[in-house]
Image (cartoon, helix red, strand yellow):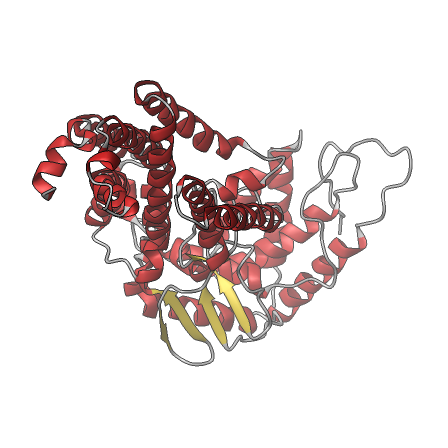
Length: 474
């Protein structure tokens, strides 16, 4: 049959308004419901991330519609008695030809939103970025095979619509699974999120594809004819079961939305030495790289001049290159990871990079003890006054007091006497800054750090919850 005649007779053509309408609705409405167009193009933009976002709504639709259309086509082949009319033709050649429009429809449901998203963001994807699209297209073929076999076994008027609905419901609902977690990762609807600079690792892509391919191969084997069909069926079934069990065991160790990813692939641009400062090229703020490096080196030099013991790192790297904190290397004395792009994009109307100076402050000022990340009820909190007064003094040294005070004011909101705490921190910092000589100011700073560490005793039994920090007088 010629392709034009095949297309005219295919259900994929006369159902096209339905699935094209689904693509249009979900792309222009649902996909932009949380992220308006202005925010989408504002960046930072990463091809693999945009492909993953574009496909998020369409996996289940593509598989379900392919399954329904393939079931209909399989039933039509049976009704038209194709095997009786052309008994010499290879069965799978006939099926493959009949399913071309159906597979094309499933592929289009995945391709259209990806192409539109890339056009919208003006990105050229790398081969690794489109791997989830390739995975989805492969799974579409698997659903087409299973659907065609179902169409030969059940009445197509019933099996096609009910099969499509059941496939959509089953696939879409896997995103709600948390115990067990493996259905989320083997269904073909990727639950793993992709951050800037990341690609899906091979297991994340291969596990759902292999499961779908193994199941489709087993179904095809049971439908096949031939003198050796029984051994083929047994082998295909055993392979499908083994693939499903191994895939489920593999995916059970993954997180809810954190399957294996490979990070650190975004290109960076660097400038200078000691420290060498690097920023993401696609982050949207790399044109200010020289200014950012000037702020980094200037802040460190001012802290040193004030008597703060800071070590000059050899490299300061943009945290956006490893946007997900779980994949980012830890900062060391020689290598710092700072949110350079985020702080550069948050520059004020005057172009001030106070956020960069603030990030340098938090990484360079250290204490002789470790403070708790959070304050729990009943824990002594007097150390907060002295620690924050010392930090505010250092923040004034690098002209980063505004972002530091905004951050602390938000933190103090958990205390009943939050405004009084903030006033006391400012008062103590002003006392240190008002000392007559640089040596006295440096000595005050070191004493304040030591006081903060002294005021972290273990909470004795029976001590009531603190209403807020009180600070040490001196």
